[in-house]
Length: 105
Image (cartoon, rainbow, N blue to C red):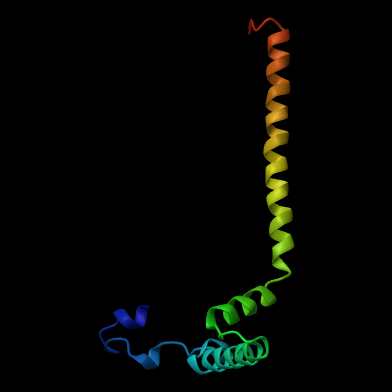
C-alpha cells in the first residue's frame, strides 16, 4: 500500500499485484467446468434427457460439501435448544420472584 502512495515508484501496476493461485485461475476453473459438463452429458445421454450445466454444478457442490450438511443440522439444533433452555431458565427465575412476594426490598 505504501508503494502505491510513494511518488518515487510511480502508480501501481499489474506487476505489483500478487500472483493468482493455480486453483483460482480461469484455466483451472474452465477445465473443471468442462469436465463436469462432459460427465453430465454422458449421464444425460444414458438416461435420455437433456444435459444441464446447472445440474452438473449442483451435483459437484453437494458432493464437495456433503460432510458440512450434518454439521449445519447439529449446529441449528443446538441453537434452538439453547434458546429453549434460556427460556426455561428465565421462566424459572420469574416464578421464584413471584413466590417471594415480588416486593424487592
